[in-house]
Amino acid sequence: MVARAFQLYLLLTAVFAAVVDFEEAGAKADDSAEEVEWKNGALLNQSLAALRPGDVLQVPGKTFYLMGGIQAHNLAHVVIRIDGTLKFSDKKKAWPRIGGKVLPCMRFQNVSNVTFTSQQRGTLDGQGAAWWGYLRYLENEENRPRLWEMDVVKDVMVEKLLLTNSPYWTTWFTQVDGLEIRDADILNRRNGRRGHDLWNLGAFNTDGWDLQGTNVWVHHSKVWNQDDCFTVKGSSSNMLFENIEASGLGLTIGSQGGKDVVTNITFRNVYMDRTYKGIYMKFRDVDKDEVSIIQNITYDNIYMKEPEQWAIWIGPAQQSDSRYFWEGHPCSLLWPSMPGAQCHPSERGIYRNILLRNITIDNPKMQPGVIWAGKSFPMKNLTFDSVRVVNWHKRKADLRYRVCDGVDSASALAIGGTSPTPACFRSNGSELLV
Ligand SMILES: *[C@@H]1O[C@H](CO)[C@@H](O)[C@H](O)[C@H]1NC(C)=O
Ligand SMILES: *[C@@H]1O[C@H](CO)[C@@H](O)[C@H](O)[C@H]1NC(C)=O
Ligand SMILES: *[C@@H]1O[C@H](CO)[C@@H](O)[C@H](O)[C@H]1NC(C)=O
Ligand SMILES: *[C@@H]1O[C@H](CO)[C@@H](O)[C@H](O)[C@H]1NC(C)=O
Ligand SMILES: *[C@@H]1O[C@H](CO)[C@@H](O)[C@H](O)[C@H]1NC(C)=O
Ligand SMILES: *[C@@H]1O[C@H](CO)[C@@H](O)[C@H](O)[C@H]1NC(C)=O
Ligand SMILES: *[C@@H]1O[C@H](CO)[C@@H](O)[C@H](O)[C@H]1NC(C)=O
Ligand SMILES: *[C@@H]1O[C@H](CO)[C@@H](O)[C@H](O)[C@H]1NC(C)=O
Image (cartoon, rainbow, N blue to C red):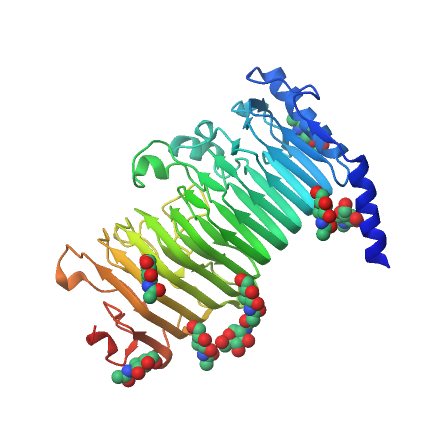
């Protein structure tokens, strides 16, 4: 009965549903004056607040400059169609703040059965160049706007969009239950160079899809950025990432901490061109009375073309949380190249039931990886099946994992032509046959 009544409700709302055009509602295109940005931003706030079930909000195929801090609450059964570009202000001083902290470009709270789409390819542009760089990092640190936040997300579709030039994390979708992302790309780079040099890496913290929750399917999406590309965060489960391309800090789980549990995550059919990291699972330091778990994880059919840093990293987070960016929390970004740089495994992070299968690391710039847990909870049931380095042009003696430690060797298996075999794994000899 309830379902019936609800269907009737939807039918009735469909009859009275409206297509709201952003420009017809008063938005002004192609004008980046600050007053226009404020007016367009306020209008987007109002237009979102006015949406009723069945409505479509349409941004026509032009460029609209707007101030950030866009907020929408309790949206349900609507379509947001972006045919043009929403370009967020680069006027940092004017940016809305609460208690000194900048608001994100857009934030949606409690969204259900909402489709974000386009009739062509819509663009969200954060004009990140105004916020990126080493000197600006010392000034703003991480007080930079995320491009798109959503919290409490139920049955949402994101498609046919380009998210670009994000000042900080591109997305941060939390408490998700039911999300599909397809044919939607992320691009955060400072120039066209194919790779991640120090200049491009200065677009700090420009994470791609940062997702926390359950029942997520991401496919046919490309990310090129300077931090984690496709990222499972917090406590999360039942996520599938497939038929994707990524170049940046990789296919990431973490950094986990607190009591986070991650389970049943698959990445498969992935092409990674000159990525910085490839497969990247990471724990922060976990408090004394807590443990954090990453389990039941599969990485399958992944090709890395000329990875520039670590192709495989299963260990502590290699990152810094402060302006002292050379410090490790818990593993320094400068480890191991700078003598004295700190790096230690996370003692209360648990890795178990992890399968890497059919992974090709083609002509890496560095040794293939790091596999590193603490002594209290060694990694259990770790399988490398056909994980191979090909076109190794450096010294033969260096063709080995840089660290292989804190692993329960009895349940760590290298099979299917895995080469090189991580030193702390058991190998039943099958790799010699291939
Ligand atoms: C949009 O609304 C939020 C919440 O009321 C507000 O903080 C923000 O400044 C508004 N943004 C613009 C551009 O008006
Ligand atoms: C979330 O949004 C739905 C639909 O608009 C509404 O019914 C529900 O009360 C909202 N939940 C909260 C916690 O505000
Ligand atoms: C989702 O919303 C659309 C309108 O955008 C509506 O036609 C459809 O029936 C809704 N689906 C569910 C399951 O409520
Ligand atoms: C694992 O996640 C997938 C979705 O990616 C889901 O289809 C499957 O049922 C989940 N398995 C378990 C045991 O929950
Ligand atoms: C994780 O995998 C183990 C063994 O494969 C299985 O017993 C367990 O049910 C799985 N847990 C989840 C939450 O998928
Ligand atoms: C292994 O992965 C590659 C992509 O790197 C794919 O082309 C190939 O079909 C996969 N092989 C198997 C046996 O799945
Ligand atoms: C070991 O992990 C694999 C997935 O890699 C899983 O299928 C298997 O059930 C796990 N074994 C145990 C004993 O948990
Ligand atoms: C090696 O291990 C694999 C997977 O467990 C198994 O299929 C294969 O038969 C084993 N080979 C030998 C020589 O024991």
